[in-house]
Amino acid sequence: MKLLLTSDGMTSRKIVDFFISQFDTLKDKKVCLIHTIRDESDWQWMDYYRKELGEIGLKHDEINISEEKDLSSLMEYDVYYVCGGNTFYILDRMRKTGLDKVLISAVKGGKFYIGVSAGSIIAGPDIEAAGIGNADINDVDLIDLTGLGLISYIITPHYSAEEEKNVQEFKEKRKEESVIALTDKQAVFIEDEKVILI
Image (cartoon, rainbow, N blue to C red; front, side):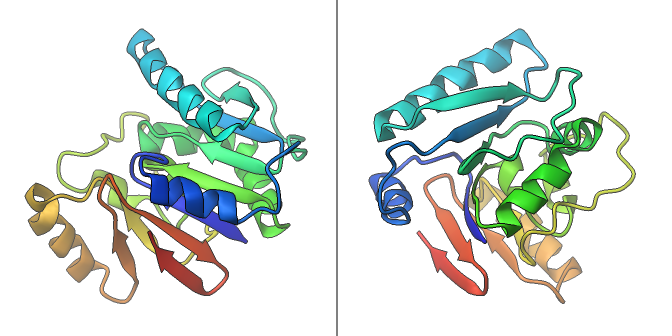
């Protein structure tokens, strides 16, 4: 399993170069950009993600999981780029479209997972970290907070000095588990038991 988990996407040359180094070639790699559009203002982020992938030279398909569809057969991609947004809502939509099972099977089968913010949190054992401080609101009344379980680590994105107290309290609460806090300029690469902070 190979996962590149970020707060804010591939925002630095180091993160981009690291991603590129994981492939012999990016030519002909099929990328699936997974996103949610709940409000018209969400489209601004799509331009950002499209530009990011375009600058690396990656062509991609886009899947809006806010729409009602069955994605249970979506296994043909080499890279799954899971965008940010409200973590509770995204996980709920993944379950309702069957995408959660696809991602688990694909990544365990060797496909590459890139997470941005919520996409990084969801890769872990649960999404409780999404509620740290003034973060996401569980406005879909999600009861089961179990994540994809691709990694044993809990990712807390958008770490800053202002969030330090809240993150430390969360770490104390979850002291039996490993919590990785990422600033907006950081990423973590996890391959099986190997962990590299970028």
